[in-house]
Length: 315
Ligand SMILES: [Mn+2]
Image 1 (tube, rainbow, N blue to C red):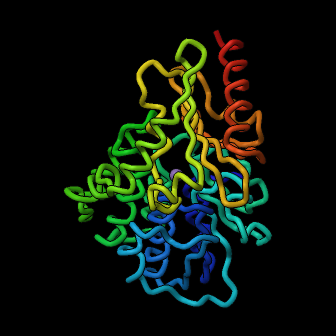
Image 2 (tube, protein in one colour):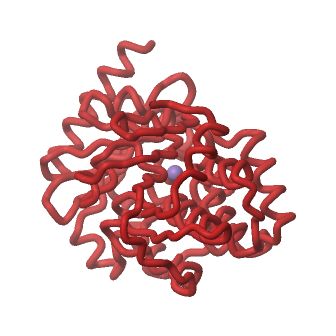
C-alpha cells in the first residue's frame, strides 16, 4: 500500500524492532540510507540491525564498522533503495513491512510503501522520514546521508538532482556533514586500479547509429587485469552517459554467474527505464538497468539492436 510520508512515519513509530535491508551489490545510497536510519531509530529507543546479501563495500566500511547494531528477535523488515523484491537478494522471501525507494518501484507486497520516483537519492526520503519521526540528526547520521546523496547524484550532476536534493544537502551540512571531503573522496578520487579499469572500459567502446548509441564492456578478466573488485566500480556506469553526442549509452558488466548486467544511460526525452523494461529491468528515467542471461559480447548485440529500435521509434 502506498502511503504518505506522514503515514509511514506514524507506522514506523508503532514498532519496536527493525531489520533494515540494503540491496544486492550495494552502493553509497543504500548503505548510507540504511545505516543512518538504523542509528536514527536506535536514538529513539528502537532495536535495529542492518543486513544485505553482500558486505558493505570497503570504501564505506570506515563509516559503518563503528556502528553498534542490536540483535532484534522479531523485527519488521524495511527495504531501502530497492525497486523490486529481487533487489534484496537472499531476503526476498521475507515479508517486508516497509519499503522506501526512489526508483520505478514494483515492490508491491510491502505493507507500507513510500516512493518518490526519480528523486535524487533515497537518502533524501530517509532524511524526510527521520525528521517526520522527530529524530535529531547527528553528525554521524548527516555524514551517512550526505555520502548517500553525493554518490547517487554524482555530486549533484544527475538529471534527478532537484531543489530538494540541495535543500537536503544544506540541512545535512548544518547538522555537521563533512561537506569539504565526502564528495571528493567518494565521487572524484580514484585509485590507480580504478583508472586502469576505466581505461579498459573506454578502449572497449563501440559506437553505432551515427555515434548516437555507445556501448562498453567490462568482463571479469578485465577486473583481474586491473586488480579491482566489482564492489569498487560505483559510478563507472555514468562515464558512458557523459560522452558528448550520445543519446543512449550502455555499460555491460559480466557477472560471476555468467550473466551480463546492462546499465543504461539516456539523454533528453529518451527513457532508459523504458528500454530496460523491454528486458525485464528498470530503474530511473535516465539511468536504468537490466540483466541478460548471456555473455557480454552477446548482450552488446542484443542491447544495440534494442536501443536502435527504440531510437527509431522515438524520432
Ligand atoms: Mn539510490
